[in-house]
Image (cartoon, rainbow, N blue to C red):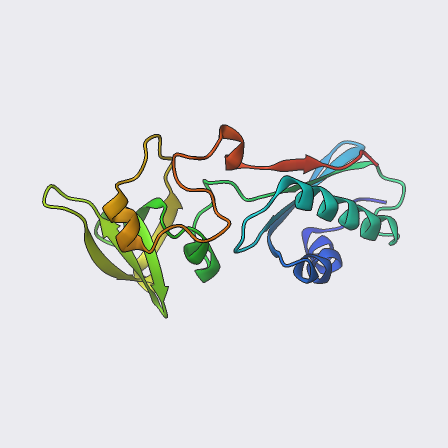
Length: 190
């Protein structure tokens, strides 16, 4: 019996993940011959800690073991955070990325700035200039694509202040280890 669909996996895990205080950001089911991989991306406003991801991975594995959807097919379960290169597509992504620098593609221009407060249907973006940082409000509906940028140096303190700082539990830009991009806990091969 094949591994269940992305939709079925999402159905199986959504309540558990939400009870633990996380959001299911994405589910990917990859078939590779007789062995398959199920990759589940989760996140929360407070970020993720490795121990919590490991516990969640074990609980998801128990859910999978309790249903017949997987049959005898071997699979690898991977529970991970979305990583820094995830496009900002939901309001919660903007809220969690406050204080981070992002590239924001609009219809007729591209803006690079530090993400500030989300207010209803728009987001504040702090844009640095020679005369100092300035805040610009951008309607979420006008954004075609937005992605957080990797920063190798400490951000301008004034920009961070205007952006409202970094949400509690989130790693400050340029303070992150290389492993912050994506925490992965692999479950046991089944």
